[in-house]
Image (cartoon, rainbow over all chains, first blue to last red; front, side):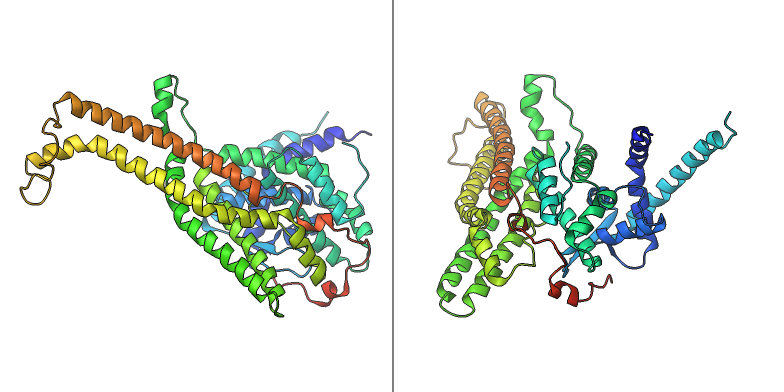
Length: 119
Length: 331
């Protein structure tokens, strides 16, 4: 079966969700995390495959950082270029709380329709 | 775009750059850096697999070059739209001319012109000192490591200059350094730095920043002082004659033509001329800001590729030294 519709729907859903998930991952972590590490955490939470392509989280991390929701620092790495470690800011936590309530409201609204018995 | 799946990090990055062709050079540099960080970490995390095997998995985890390029383009557009200061578009020619006073970029560009004298002197001294010491020390053992450190430091300074230019003029500049690869041995790395045109264009930028900084500073200072003097001289003369300005009750403008006071046509003409001059200066500052950003981008940002991409990397397990060390702790 052609899964184009499914992929398109997933991509549209992911638009705003990546930022929410990244803020949540960083808010739950005691240590600062770098892009690859975050990508692997997301994948391990979903049996090894991430809902969204891991390459899409880097530009979103940069956008969140530019919006001062995250701070970052650079640490040298033996395997490749120096890594940028991210940490959530107080402003980021406030935005996360707001986004979370929006997400919960949206989820409940959607659930109230799709959880009904379909004909 | 259909193409063969990349079999090495080098190929992946090349395809990613091809997908981003036409996008901002700074965006391409950032995307290549992020991809390289991920891909090398992924290869290092699977020491038992060859680079080609790891790359096969990449399409389903990190995403194909096409998907990643799409994500960068989308995010860039969204971030640019969200960060842009909303501007009212003046609907008359007059509004367009004086509207420059409501554009924050005009003020920041003017400040940048003043700042350029300081940064220009610093860059010039940095480049001349580095080059002279590199030449002088080249006969000693420390000469080559010194030159390598100097070139590496010049890239850090170039990145900082890019950030400054983006803050002042709004032009998109790289947010990540261009990565040269650390798997290379000493001599190939040295040769690559010497052959990389960006090494020399960065130094050329540093050297030209001194004359440019002087020119910008002079334009800004002369423009500001002449236009502000024209605008406020009639007021200053009047206040001085009333004994409210100057040293005690002394008329500091006693040698100025008595006609220049508030209610004369000459005073009015002077103030209008000052205002027009100041407006022109703001337009010039904004224009110089844009031109300088283009100039900086052409010399400081690589048009083609960061270093590793021009150096073929043999597929296979990583060199021993990359496996021997533990991963950097995430503290």
